[in-house]
Image (cartoon, rainbow, N blue to C red; front, side, top):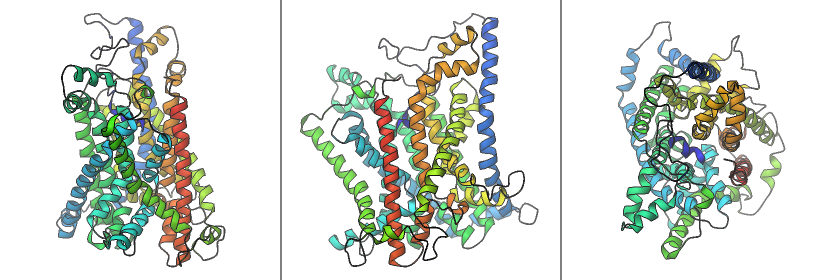
Length: 590
């Protein structure tokens, strides 16, 4: 994914490649000692006003639909009788079982992140540098797990690794209720994050820089370590951050594959909220998770500001070529084998189970049953969940594009710590408990002027919270790559900020906008943690419908869950294939 570019051009003060090929050239700027003229000062004032104007809607959106619900549920847990009970924080954290949860959450996230990088970095190189048949389709396929509900993927891995699963039948080995099942499932989910984030930048690095080092006598490993790796550090850091956040807040995978022996913070928050009904303990754990996420983002922002490497970027279409030599062909074969076993096999199990009856024969019974409301699991036929999910995802994408686009435009302009802090805050919905957000929606958005409990827009608003960070990370680097002198020239010629953005920025970022829309749409389709609390019984989404069917006993319910999961995979794959087509067809626009 082009999300990688978000870490490449952190601000306009970084040295960048010039048009003539000098890798260390810097952007021209005002000469020192020259006082800006009245027109320049007016332009700066207008720029500051425009920046804060652009930030207004995103700030209000996150304040109302993120900060307010999360704060309200924490306050309800720590202030049950009208007075703060802050001593409860120490009581909860002193419990041995809670300390075990904190320790397991941390070390499994570190282990999952390291394993994901180890397995996925070769894939990032192959997708960036090699050209082979079916590359676009395969790129879309490896992204499907990332947008699948965790309950679906967890069930697939359970069928592979659990009792009577494929590994049990063929090798007599069971990995369910072990940490290895959790780690492998996390790699399954996050493989695409590394491939798209790191591979997106790798494909744009000029290979001639590494080739020049080879000509000067450097070995392949030394050339890669001294030339390519420093340029990739921002993308690797960004991918590491995202994978760690996703695994640190893991919910469905641990709940299904870990059994009672393993529990992350997210699982424990859900258990304290919905099973034990101890809101004070859930509030404490929410605060701990929030503090950990803020710390991670702060460290990441600090390290990014310290890395301002000069990069020479080229068109990604010119860097891919067919593998050469036995070593490169072996690397391609190894990556394809990894994708087949780690990504395609679990997905194939889901598809096979949707067409397999209790005796192992082929059947369409489960797909036919989706058109009927009989059985009591739903007020409407389960097939209706497809239309609901598509409508919700479209609405959530529109919201995410507006909010995320305005936020990215505001962050493009030079600013101080306030705006940089706002940049980090935009990532918080990816790391804060979705269970907390969803439950917070229920207890806060039920009174005027925010009485949205019965509103159709409640679900898209929750889904948009997850989509906004992806929109920002996709559009921000492209907006920052626009030469600011073009905007300044337009302003000097009398163009308003709106007209300058429309005629200068928009034509250059159109492709990034389409990519952001495709990814926000796919992510919205798979959102589960918050939606499960707020989706109406007569308007379920696909992930909620799958989870509800999996929670009911009976072969018919399980088969319908696999059938709905297969349909969800098809919808995600189609949207991602369209996204890949947009990437290819419009590659020459900027």
